[in-house]
Amino acid sequence: MTNAKRLLWAGFMAILAAGVGFAIRNGILDNWGREFGFTGGQLGDIMSGAFTGFCFGIIIGGVIADKIGYGKLVIAAFALHVLSAVITFAASPAAAGATPDQVAAAKGTAFQLLKWGMFIFSLANGTLEAVANPLVATLFPQNRTHYLNILHASWPAGMVLGTVAGWILDDKMEVGWKIQLALYLVPTVIYGIMFFGQAMPKSEASEKGLSLAEMFKDVGLSGGLVACYLLVLFFSGSVFGGLVSDTAAKVIGYGIGGALLIAVGIMTKFSVGSILLFVLFVAHALVGAVELGTDGWIQNITGNIFTSEQGRFLFIITSGIMFALRFCAHFIEKKLGLSPVGILVVCAILACIGLNLTSAVNTFFMAVLALSVYAVGKTFFWPTMLAVASDRFPRTGAVAISMMGGIGMLSAGLIGAAGLGYAKDRFTAEELQKTNPAVYAEVKADKPSKFLGFAEATGPDGKKLGDAQKKLADARTEVAKAGQTDPKAAFEKLSPQDRVVVESDIKGSRKTLVADSVIPGLMAIIYLAVLMYFKTIGGYKAVTISAPAAGTSPMAVSDRS
Image (tube, rainbow, N blue to C red):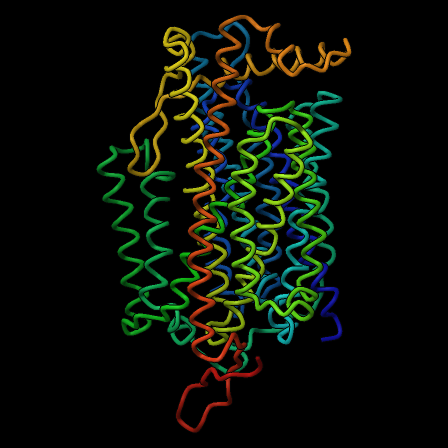
């Protein structure tokens, strides 16, 4: 198409808006913790809303895109982006002099507003990716890995822009978090203009006349099981958790998930689906947990080990590395001879090593090196996985890659962000209890953190922890102005209680990163198994849909190696 490059860059700008909004939200997590007194688990729960809505946007959008047209989906996403800002901006703490009950009520209301604002923001992002991913895969069928990586270079670019804006407005100018968050609306307006009035193609499967049931055939019950399990977690926790009893919430969640799985079975005549696609779905759930889930906490964690400013600088470095390298996928694939799956194997190993190195850093220079290894590792996960699914399963049209994106984002919120929030609460609480039980009793939160089937963990109260961290940041600034270079000097200026709290939090942060490194380790094993599978069938090859014989459906056949 003559407007292929314009559509590519329009999609680039749409994902850029998502990255800017996500990065600013990462930067103001500590603001929310201090202003409303949220625990790490509560902040993780709020952050989960930044992912879960994505699933609904991208899966529903991917299914209906060719029916209603990409243009209408772009309009819907634009409206949702604006609505999310309105809802989030409505969150405010209780007025001065409020009673304890009024403070608790205001905190509960703010929690719901921030969480649902996150959800709607994520819903808009998912709707946009339901447009951008199949659009680029269709426009550039001979080089999907390269162009999907370029499309998703916009994500780290948005992260850098959002982090820099937050760094200046928050740390330097102390501008309110609502003004900071409003900045993501700027690229939102730009992508709306770029998409306006543009003709867009349909997927290869839609062009060949495949029905929705035929598009779901390769997904089948196995692929549907992965998505439906995550939806069970979503409905039983994020939606109905707290509204009804835990048992009732689980019954509702499993009921919805089971009904959806049965619907997939009926639609596909109970096809098991492709085992390879099932494995890719599981792997992408891990991608979402380690890449986006960790992105939501890495700045917060490294900011506790170092200064907040250093934490943001490290985050900018990792995002900048991702942005630059995503323009190099073609060189790596064609010149270095690595297949897309080979790239994924190397990346998983590097991500595992990088997180373990980061957990042990003590100097800023070592942190730069460790996080650079991690950044190189996570660079190609998301877009390359989409390329593999597009190359191998063209019969699914936009369905498989849309479901893959939804699975990744659901996992990021329900397993990655929530799991890391729980881990940080748990490890910090363990350190506090071991070091000074009296201090732990003084600063522990009112409610415990929960995650899947793990034992409950009661971390420090978000406001008390935030106050101690603020005192440490002020002490570091004072020490730096005095020309002192001893990293322990700032800690010596704290009260004994504050020192115990921040030191335990730092140790908890380190253990959280070690636990997180298990995920890319599992991914490396899965990708290696997939690589070996492709070697047994003659190597990795992209396929295309053949013209149908009379009275038959189109078939997927090998196209190129």
